[in-house]
Image 1: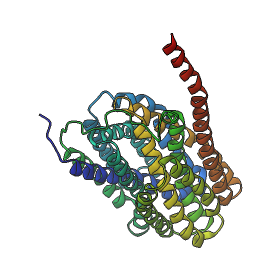
Image 2: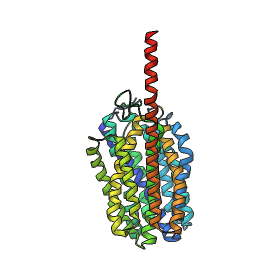
Image 3: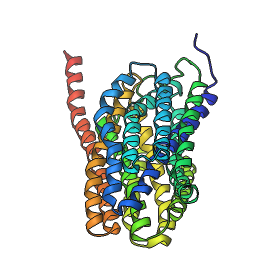
Image 4: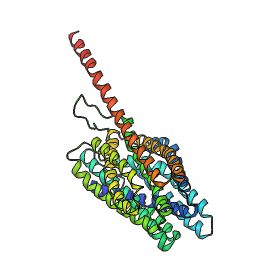
Length: 412
């Protein structure tokens, strides 16, 4: 029989699980990036690692998202964490046994990416199933997104400092334990019946003249955030370790400041959401972030110390808003498919953008690479807004014809 767990407890457990899963995935990835940057001295070497992580998710997430709509989402989350923990433990054992570091890093992160291809849609589907809709879901998404992003950024801090102080093997053993913690948190949520939020909700709709936003523009808006954060995470160690010739500790300290910016974004979102729509917050936030990215590669360590947390502040609010828009627009029966498409499409774009930015950076400078990434963020946000405006114009032009048909029907 299903066990009824209070909604507040369930939400806290899911947020804790999301944080530890993000921390574990990205400690593995960042540690590998730092080792490759030291050994190969090019962004392309680091970029290929991120591509190895993006490729299986880009190919498989759209299909596995449909699977997440049919199976037990809680069981899928627990299974993903269990397999990830085993894979994560395999890398330090491989390194301790004298295995080639480069081969082990690529293989372990590729395997974790295969698991993430099902984890991303399954976790979104479980949230839609367990968290009540409306304002509760909106607040939860803010906390969930901040927990995920804080875990990603804290992983760089932990990875940078721990690799410099203790080496890679002890850190990677700790990393495997984070997946076990996540699995225990999700197990503790119990086999609970659905709490609400089962169907799609009207998004940014104030009346018949303003229908829900088109799904394509919402997926584009959300997915481009994944591209930006992934490519940025490959650019930053390249800039700090290679171009500025600083240590892993400096890299970790800068990302720690970014974590503070994300935490501030959660508080800022609560204030801005009372006055502005999620669409406006997302568009303005992503546009502001693109401009800050351009400046981050030109002012050295001091500039990064100021611009990274500021960029995290605006990006965090945009990320929360775009997640709210997408999750509210999707229904429980197809939310795995929707987030699978968003994850797969975003990571497919990541591969292309990563190769372009890495080639530009290695042939010019990190400053030009940051500018290229900022230009992509600016264009993709603008295009999502264009798609939304086109859909709105099409709806408004169709409305008079529909009203005229209704009047003619009434006369007949």
